[in-house]
Image 1 (cartoon, rainbow, N blue to C red):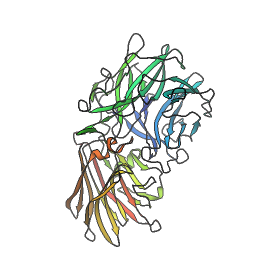
Image 2 (tube, one colour):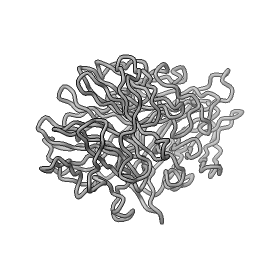
Image 3 (tube, helix red, strand yellow):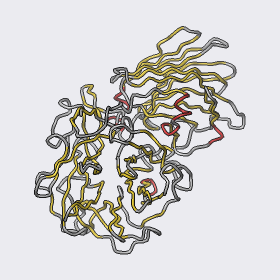
Image 4 (cartoon, rainbow, N blue to C red):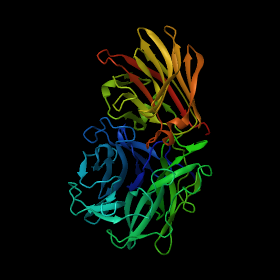
Length: 507
């Protein structure tokens, strides 16, 4: 059947996949956002629904003052002997750990730490042995390398020394290791090239889990690096994980990003989840994708009846009630700052702003399509409240109402690195009814205020300034409702009602 990529849209990078009880489960990176490590479930590998997060409480993860693109990334999810395991890294604090649960719809354990460095950890189970795998640097020659040890899965304690097992096929930044056993061979699959335009999936095999490993002669097995930025709207392909269906078919999930071009190619929706077929030859080597590439539309041997485009969901307060898993906060969650009703959310701001590496009052959802239209009504007396299209503390666009000494002002404020500009400022009539509106396409965001039913364009801003190519980092744009109150002793509220965000106009 014809399949449209990406299969999970918006900022959900570093996918890892497992199967259990007739279903597939996907875990993705969350970085500085809380809850951590979003989880998805699917019956058919195409249609994914959010079911929760692995890291839902402070005892599991410390995100205090984590900078943009810091925190939790590159999880691996595995199912073994009736139990789910998710292993990941809090890069800000340089610690690898795993959590586990017997019920994926319930809470996960507190973290179990493993004394092996590097990032992108993975687990491989075989018999009574558990192998812990991550990247690192071989001190003998300074090259990037994959390290492996055996651990006690109950305590996380190393049972063997960490040993280097493969240095890759020659690309920089070897990472994202996963071990598999098919037939007589152990397969070690990694990412190389860095999670940018040179990203790729490579692999090697051995008769022993410690090697020596023989590289696949046609590496990389999957990459879009040679297609050219304007020839293909998918780039950055890498960080793959394999899955086998009950019918014996093999597939790979991997990350990639959809690019636009404004003289130079860029992406602002973040790295997303793509699906490609895997084919084995008679000699026990596999290929992936279409001639080793990922296409927007691919013909995959799947049993699904139809594909519902994951990103094209409308966001409303009904969504908050029915799918709270789609929403996130910056760093730490302070429940006293949020009140939810059937048709509204009330935010109580704290002293932290969107420019801080702290935890402002912020309720966000990932932007998953280029073409969107958002409206929301705003009332209350919070000193500052509004909506933001947020990439990091140094790159965000804010449409907000400021309240000071009974005077209300509607502003459009743009932060691009060290440059902060109030692009437009409108003094509001007393008791004016305010609706905030944003319309986006691939190139621009357009910001409006609807004041007593009169629509006013405050200005426009380019999407590329919220891209990784301009701002750096590894995340994507998140739309957030937020509030700020420098004087926390005086509890002042911002009430948002009539939220509607249509994502994807071409459906």
